[in-house]
Amino acid sequence: MGNIYPMKAIFAWLIALGWLALAPLVIAATALEPVTVGYSTFSGAYLPLWIAVEDRVGRKYGLDLKAIYAGRIRPQQLLASNDVPFVMATGTGAITSHILGVKDQAIIFVSINKVNSAIFSRPEIKTTEDLRGKIVATGRPGAFGDTMVRYVLRAKLGLVPDRDVKMLPIGEAQLTFPALERGVVQAASLTIPFTLIAKKMGYRELIDYDKAGVVYPYNTITTLRQTPNKLPDLTEKLLKTMIEGTYIAKTDREKSLAVMKKYMRGTSDEILEETYQYAKSVTEENPTPSLEITKAAMEILSYEYPKAKDTDPNLIIDTTTMKRIEQSGFIRAVYKK
Picture (spheres, rainbow, N blue to C red):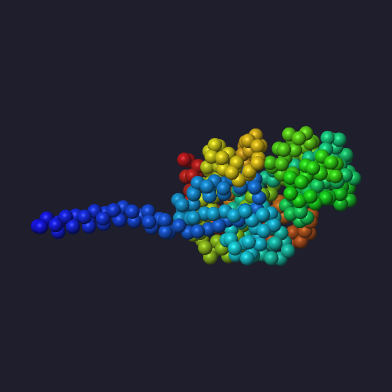
């Protein structure tokens, strides 16, 4: 009987030690802050986000990160309605809203400043002049693809849209190929991976936007202007998570291809490989938004929205969080792994 109480004390002590060992794990699990990012399409540009979700990279920075497909139309709507605090999409929505006088959005992260697009034509269209009087397929009126092809036709090829060439909104890129095949349209503006598909189908590349020197905040994280000030820790955690997701995407080919295969269902292995290699080459290590590239985007949009010339580009981007991350040495540390 004399040994019972010491044994109880030892047992209690062991239990206490066990709880102490588990406590950090329990605290870490309960401390994760949930955040959802809406994204606008299924392309290699979104690989860093998908990897960050699939690899649970956010846990390192205290985040429970999720991503939802918002469609090409809804990202800015989700942002404005506070359904999600951040969206990943082209910079068009944020820039256009400023041009139209609604200045509540800010671009805080730009991972790609190339547009990975080209105009492809049927084989009989061999030159720019052959395109005169013909029909060019575009995306939805006012959307990125439509705006960009109108700019390239006018500024790079010397053709005035709706006068020298007719514009036909086709919508989704998949619908473009039947229209090209049947001769409903003679050319189309396409983005990767559809540019790769067009090449393999034998269509002629009339102009590559990247080679023509077109730059644009093509893949951004956009938020409401007050968010970085209202939620500075959450904003910084998300951007750090995305920087590490970008690093993984650039350095782990096998994981990247597996993640792309999951999200870009039905895409062939060959197209996935080419898409990955392109995305890897153009994705920025330092995704701080550029004022000069924002100005270039506004020049592009000015062909459709003349008020762009009177819009202050400084209000469209917010580099506060990225500058803080950059100056802390975080990006250099990630890429030294």
